[in-house]
Image (tube, rainbow, N blue to C red; front, side, top):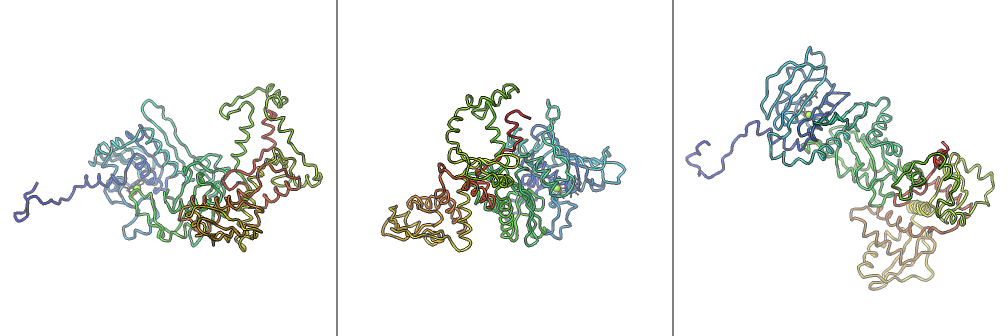
Length: 612
Ligand code: ADP
Ligand code: MG
């Protein structure tokens, strides 16, 4: 330590300039949090180099080895050493930090990796006679040497964090790190359907297990995107996803969003990208939730992969060292675009319900699967025997027959024409709640209560949008006793409620007087309705807009006001219900995101009986 200035007290702090190794290690702490962050930086570099094929290998959760091989433009030999210097980048010239078209721009990834691990870069630029190689070990660079490689780059990182043992201690199990690596590779691959990706585990003792593979897609953008999402999110997602293609104020939104009936129990299938960058952004996630708000109960989460593209100047990507967040300059436009595009797509999807529902149904029908856990494959003779002895095998069948009302009132011609319609012709009602309808190539089973609930709700919404819900005055106003607090809460939203056709007044202390109720609901139990409204107010966050609040209340009211199961319907009533479902947007799911009907194709039915 140098001697303090004679005039300065010796116990004052001394300020030093840190050397570059320490500076790089500090920067690495922000950029490289775990093996997955290294994988992310290296794949982004390959994408910036316009690679069409990227192969990632790792060992021991990425802790001992990460290797990323690409067929991009490569690095000129004369630039190799510079690439390892801090804040050295080929992607911007530093004059404009707003106009960034590449993943990288900070020039920090390679020097950071070289500071905390053993890094070797081998690269051959297009047109160069040979490849060159350079290594950095805990910040110390070796001289450049020639190497053999086709055009492209291989970056190998061994013993990540060996130079920063404190960070090493924070790493999780190999399995958890592999999970994080797989997750980031998949996310990046989602946004780049024309690039082929592989991910391979080469841990010792393993035999080079391929963990993930997504072949480069061809063709038109949406086709490629759909193909890639199928590879990553599975065919269930792909089959239940709606194409999203919208634009507002020069922000373009593309992607696929799943039908509400294909929702998930957690927010695990929500992928959002801004200019190709995967982002976790509260604003965008909030917009996604808001778009589905009407169709899902609070514990269900929509599934979607959405890509926003706009002029880079309109988003700030320089707010997070690992670039996981972005900031929109006009956040309202992006949010509004997502909400309106998704709502529009969902409305167009109309009564379509998720195909997984039918598959699940088929599974439940499967013989010998009483608890949904065991699946027995029967041989053909016993399948046939089973088909012939349903009554004996399947409890409840006799009972079903007893309440099986046949549609006799409807003439054959009407049936024949209705059979061509998507939800077909009603043939029967079973258990006084399920309509069995015949379609051109199969059958449909409708949950009459769920369907009716949705239809009432959609009608109510339409009425509100037009001129408010018609109300009907009660002959004798109903007085409901509540707690003082509850009464006050209801009176505070009395104006909103009156637009719903529910007119209430204070009746002194803890009592409320109901004067009018929504005409569409017919005779209602006023007290139960007020309780519903209170429950809904409890559940709703303060943040919800008045419109969302009204819709939430409506949804609950519609649920309780609609036909209960157990009401026998005539053939005409059933067919009318089917036709109304076809004509009503969103009628494929009830207000809680459950399906209102399931469809079985003839081929599915044949499969059930072993006929195929
Ligand atoms: P940044 O990506 O922010 O520019 P990096 O430290 O990640 O910073 O990379 C530094 C430079 O090295 C890049 O600007 C690029 O020119 C070059 N480079 C890194 N990886 C590759 C690669 N896979 N292919 C071609 N060039 C690369
Ligand atoms: Mg980079």
